[in-house]
Image 1 (cartoon, rainbow, N blue to C red):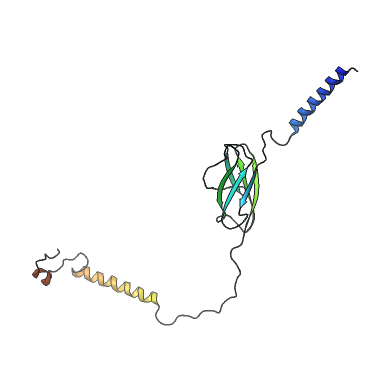
Image 2 (image 1 turned 180 degrees about the vertical axis):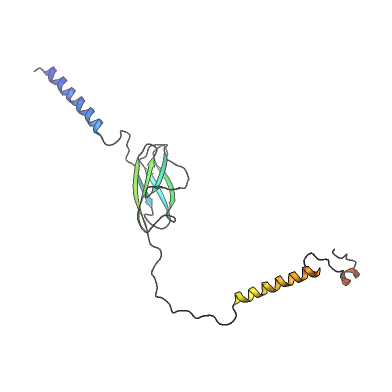
Length: 183
């Protein structure tokens, strides 16, 4: 076998091997090494997400346990370097424990991080002694009586013609000072 034949056989084998490797690849050719960092990584608060390694000038969608999540700003885009910063809130999220935060760009590049929602209930103190029933007239009862009396007084005034929007009798003192009475 000549050197020329060996060379072409080698180059052909190399070419076919490269084609097979390219077609068997499990990552898309445009896959980047995207990542996100959460600050803080635990608590119950607003969370700053910093992402890098995404496609430049791409829209970013953020997910909390695979559920799309609103962000601040509402529409997040990467800059020309493939980086972004946004804010999310853990206040409305479900459950104490570890949750997955995912950022995905328009080309399908994905980055994952975890956030731990902490229990903010605190220590449960001892049960106090039972309370006693209130004696006497309560403040609410007195307020109700006052409102009832005011309503009855208003009704009496309306029906007697001297209540709300009724005619007012001229005031003798005001008339003597030259002030016209209200009609």
